[in-house]
Length: 141
Image: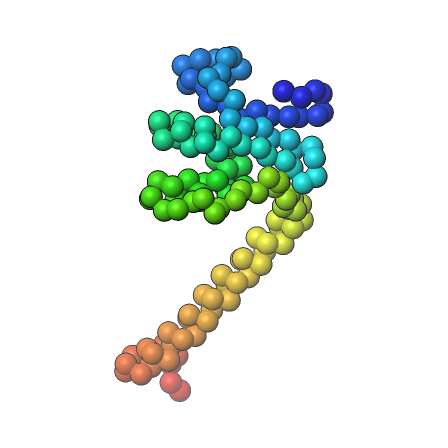
C-alpha cells in the first residue's frame, strides 16, 4: 500500500500457498513508518486468534509486535496469566541508525577490550606457574 516514497503497510493473515502479493484472509492491522513516531494499529483479538490457530508471523511483523509489546502480552496469554491490564503502545520510536564510522569505532573498542582481557589473563597465569614450582624460561647467569 502507499505511494511512491510514502510507504504504508497492512498486517494481514495470508495463506502461505498463495502468492505473496495476492489475496489475504484477514486484515489484522497497519504500520505507517512515515509518521514520527511510526504508528502501528492492531486488531488484538483477531491476531491472537490467528496465532492460536498456528499462524507464523514473518520476521518483520514479529519485530513490530515485539516493539509495541504484543509479543509479551501473547506469551502471558498462552501461560494463562491475566493480560487485561496490559496496554500496547501505538507508536514506535525510531532507534538512531549506526553510521559506518560508529560501527568501526565499536569494532575497534571490542578488539581493544579483548586484547586487554587476554594480556590480563596471561599476567595472572604467570605467577601461578611460579607458585607451582615451574622454573622460568630465562637462563640464569
